[in-house]
Length: 144
Length: 144
DNA sequence: AATGAAAGATTCACGTG
DNA sequence: CACGTGAATCTTTCATT
Image (cartoon, rainbow over all chains, first blue to last red; front, side, top):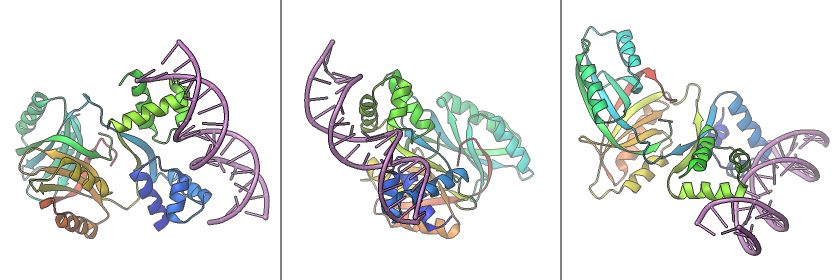
């Protein structure tokens, strides 16, 4: 994993359909040399795959960012269990800053989001929630 | 946007480097017909791009949430360009609430995060940033 | 890691229903 | 208007040095 590997990765992240020929030119290497490196990066799991970024009209779910404020006696395991129970949660982190947990959720609509928030607030370990609705996806390099 | 378009999209989401030849075989169409459809889907913004899914061992493990406050005259396209240029950005949304854009980023370390924040603040369209470092991943249903 | 040749993929102009 | 055909070009792949 050297600087050339990283250059190759950057090209493929920017555009997964970049030809090996173009990458080879950019990194000043022959095409077979680039192919061997890409093959190795794929085998080693550094490159996990290639995907198209889709903006399907109509298939827009409602994304929201929810911040949780937890009770002082809340254990990490309790919070993990809590967020794992909710299928709406895409990713959850413990965070630095004023809140304790930040999570990105995906709901069908505002009613669904509202009921999720009510459920969370009902939980004894959660003292407060703060949420903001995501209006539009500007960019996504992860499959939401 | 018919059933064939959706089949083509599915192939490209599963593997963005699938050849037009393979897709054409799978959807029982000629290669140029598939190319014309892919070109159209790209032009219409349904296919926003192609990216490699990376799992760098050790690297890019510091996640942070960055909120951007934008200048009044900032256009959506300007912001899209801005976030697409930064490989650290995993996902970016326009948001309701006090900030304009919320994004989840992935950096190597705090130095890397600091330089990213400095770059963002230098940008003329960005009036202010607010960030919080994610301490730990509690749960992730998406490939970070 | 580079070379070069063969196989495969892409792109384009042109013709069809 | 979307589809297919065929030719030219570019890309990938692999054996060899």
